[in-house]
Length: 563
Ligand code: ATP
Ligand code: MG
Image (cartoon, rainbow, N blue to C red; front, side, top):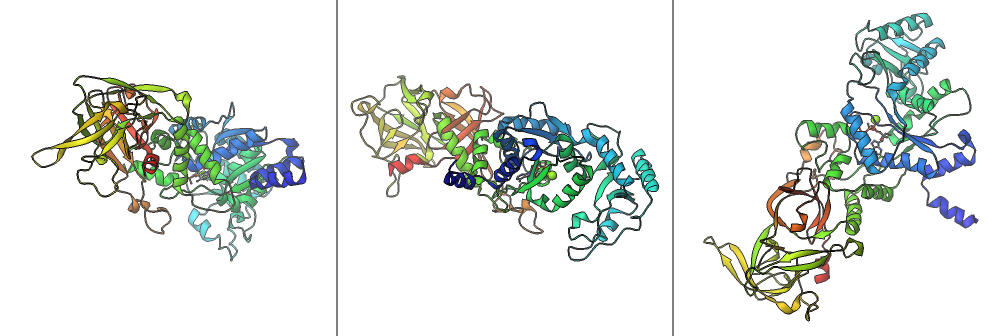
């Protein structure tokens, strides 16, 4: 490679790719690349996790390595198999595979116990009989050293005896912990004799009642990396301050040149969204949303139900990139990514959300014409379909105005519009009920303007979507908007994000009318309802009862073209 090409390549790489390539160039770990994605099975995955998944699996794929799936299941009080199953489903849906490497931190409870015992024997760990509160009070502050525990200098024998009895179930939860014996005056608070084991008597979803003591995250994570031969342990920035501790444990554990390396990157935060599993769980528990897969949730199952594709999520993650600086990303970039994807992939169909009946008075009664319409002008391979046209059709209520303002190019008395894929019609009158509301619009059509006809290209300013009244199918349409009105709902000290809930985040429209080609849609089938937005069939949808979710609004290109 020429020097200039080398520079360009480096600039287009993010810092983690650069770090990995340097490790490879330095011959570290025998040229192996091995990453892991380590979810805690205490909730469903959200789009923030997608950012980590794309990196962990992506780096392994790019450098010919492997990526493990490892459940970080060290806290039986919060974890559940329901979450394990959903996490696996979501990773696969995103398009990644851990092959046969599905691991659990709990697989290593035995080895971790052995390691803890070895630290005790080396005088590097001790049992502390104080409460967690007292221990935390003794921790000091970043500028003041911590105080040593009165139990810090217990004998190895006493420590071993107590640690075994802790695991026999002899002591109550919270009455004793095992701490690493490092340095109470360390400038890094995490190095001040961190707690590494605690007593928990809740049965574990995999190991049952075998253990009464459980390792803390910091004691399980790096060591699990080491046991699995992980070379690059990629995690979010909040773990940067834990890195010296990660390295300290590895130093005590390692026996040769191999060592896993932790590298931190910025979390994904999204505007108008909460992203912590704990807060998402609260929304589910309190019934603010219908479940983890409510289409307003930033969970992967929620986004899937909303109509997002894995490709669009991966594309979004690509667009935001990986840095060392915390930021909050604009949710409209995510919406851009799904629009861009569906624009090419989703068939375009006619769906009328708020129907208004139009009678074409000079169109023969009982006559039906099949209009051939292309499914997606962006991509010919989508082909064409036949859409029935007849004397009575529905258009959108918003597309008609009896007394329009200046520059209203849709249907108004005396004005012509084109019905997409069919004819040009002209409004000749309206029918009103006793309350003076318009119940029907009357029009005439121009038979020469049918597509393929002699005046097919005649210009009119507006083009509307429509469905034939006799052929249309009823549908329920769920319009989703942002769940929160505030840009950063979790960013206010002492204010619960739920104070910022958007009261209009869900609008259910019944009595919508869609074209008959949608009779057999299956859940998650995706469409553009022309001029209206992108939609997908919901899990609640069946051939007898169509239900659609609005994925995202459309940038109305027709409107622009028409101006
Ligand atoms: P939460 O903060 O939502 O509770 P967590 O960090 O506790 O998430 P884990 O299951 O421990 O959730 O996360 C698994 C992996 O996903 C970790 O490596 C973590 O760093 C990463 N991760 C979690 N949230 C984000 C995010 N918002 N952006 C990028 N990566 C994330
Ligand atoms: Mg975590």
